[in-house]
Image (cartoon, rainbow, N blue to C red; front, side, top):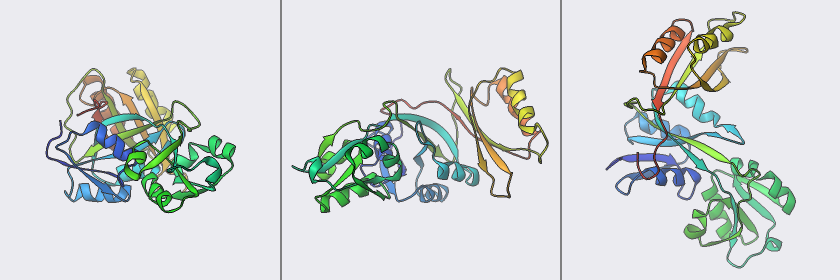
Length: 278
C-alpha cells in the first residue's frame, strides 16, 4: 500500500485518470492533479511528487503518444499497471433533455470513442482539455452536454442522460504507475517493457532482434514503433513481453538484444495493481 505519499495524475478531479488513481491508492495518499502529462513527468523528476499514474494505451484509440515520448526522454520507471474499463455517459444540467442540447463537449479521446452515438444524436462537438473541464463548461451553458464518467454527476450536480455511449463495450484504458525506482519482485504474472532502436538501416534488422526473443520462446505482447525524431526512417520500438527482467532466461535475452541495438532502455518489470492498493 502507498501511505503518506504524493501521487500525480492527469486532472482535474473527475477525469478517468482521477478515477484510476482513486482505485489503486488508499485514503492516506495525497493525489495531485496536473494539467498535462509532461508536467507530471517534470514534477516526478524534480521530486515534487513520489509517484504518478498516467494513461498509456486505449483499446480503441491506441497508444497515448505523449506518454510514450515522455518515457523515452525521462529517467523514470513503470512499476505497475491498471486496466480500467471506460464507460462513457452523456451528462446535462438538471432537467434537460436531448432536445435541449445543441453541443456535446469533452476531451478529444472521449469524443473519438463515442463517434457513433454523436452521429446518431446529430449534435455539434467541442473538444476540451479534459472531461472535467467540459463538465464545468456544461454547468455554465444549459444547451451543452458532456461525455464523461459517472463521477461528474455528483461532483458537478449533473443528470446522466444516456449511459454506456462508447462505440465499443470493451473500451479499456491502460494506466501505468511510474516512479524513479522499479523495485518489483518476481511474481507469476510479470510484464517487462523496453525501448530500443536498431543499428542503422540494415535490412532485416528488426527481424533479427525479434528472432532473439522467438528462439527463447519469449512471448511479446506488444510491439509499436514511434519516430525517433532524428530523421525520416529512424524509429524507436516499444516492446512489452511476458516475464520479469531478472528471470534468468529473460535476463539473458535482454542482454543479447542490448548488445545488438543502437539504443536500449528497460522501462520496468511489473504486474497489474490490485484495486484498493498496490
